[in-house]
Length: 127
Image 1 (cartoon, one colour):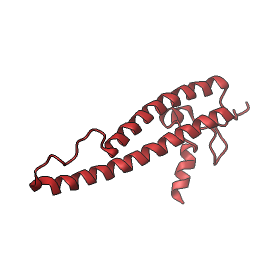
Image 2 (cartoon, helix red, strand yellow):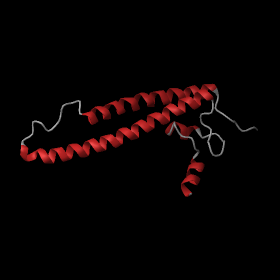
Image 3 (spheres, helix red, strand yellow):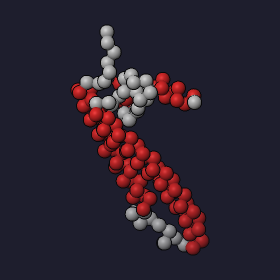
Image 4 (cartoon, rainbow, N blue to C red):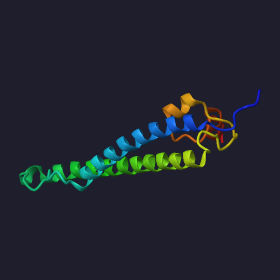
C-alpha cells in the first residue's frame, strides 16, 4: 500500500473551513486587544483623584504592555493561519516540512497551522 503524499481536496476543504472559523475568531480577539491598547473605551485616569493617579497610571501602563504583547502574539497566530490557507491553496497543507510525511489529522485539528509532525517538533526541541 502506498503512503499518501497529500490530503485530498475534500480533506483540504474541511481544514480550510476550520481555519477560516479560527481566523474569524482570532481577528475579533485582535480587534478587542487593539481597542484595549488604544483605550478607545475612554477608561483613563483623567477623572481620578491625584492621590491615586500615579498608581492608576502604573497599572494602566502595565495593562497596556500586557495587551500589546497579547496583540503581537495574536497577530502572529493570524499570520500563521493565513499561511496555512496559502498551503491549502498550494495543496501542500498538512505535509511536515522536516519529514515530508503527512501530519495526522488529529494534530491539524488541534493546531491547524502546524507545519511539523509531533515527532519532528520533539526532535527540533532537542537541538
